Image 1 (tube, rainbow, N blue to C red):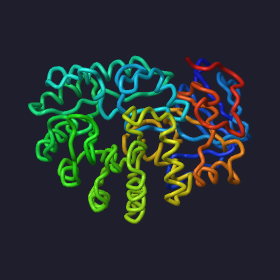
Image 2: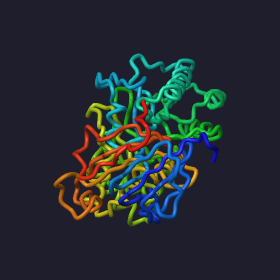
Image 3: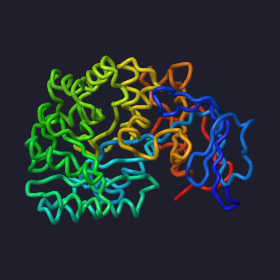
Length: 396
């Protein structure tokens, strides 16, 4: 490494969660990153911790890959007109989430539905979140909602301009599986990942998307399989779990009973690696800064899943299904982390046991690209142990 490289050292880590279901807890008490990328982890006594430009003393807190919200509806900057709220992305960071993925900028007032307009908005949305990261949070946006009249060249044009996502299939005028499958195929040809609305209508203009259409369309992500808000009947959810090789997305804004049905069915089928988490916010139920953390605690406690596995649903699984360069403790991955600990006076012998009892942990710090972005969370309960920024400054 050059003498001018940025070096992050996090020492005195109590536990390292990997994001990997196959090995959810790594040995070690120290992690090092250079220029925003993970370079090493293990025991401090065996590592070169000198010349850190940023040094964090974790004071025994747990380090995990930053959480990923697989399903949000951003509009512009850190503002959502759906709830007339400023700073919702910053609040989400205080819930341990470092990456957001748009399922469509559908709450934009006057959202264009003509082909020229929807392409322009998708490209603009991708650009403004690429150029402006609220509180450092990574927002993958610019997710057009497909409409009748689109042709293959439209997808090629958007992909060339940097658009990598499709908004929820079914929120536009395309509501038949044959047409949707053709457009999803065009999108995939040009490297664009797709999500489909699943369940009953959520906003004016949307409609019921049942299991048959989901299967026929063949998107990369089964969006809110537990409904957003309204879930499909049990037999259709089971059918989707059985028939889909795609990511099975469970959201905070959906039906909790259907979420547990999805979890239990996926476990029986050996498909827990396909489970990913989102909030589906901002929405009619509001902004949910702790939505991903609450889903981890709910699925762990009511679904009888070890907490270290449930955390993987919220980072590593999503990273793999979404092909992201974050969400896992791996050399070369982005140094995006959440440091957290058992909430003060919460039951349980440690943080993981407390989460499996249904309690939220306290977030003490977030790190994005090797830069400390937030300290003690203003949204979670206070953590028993708090990390300390010893060397360096808080990113702005």
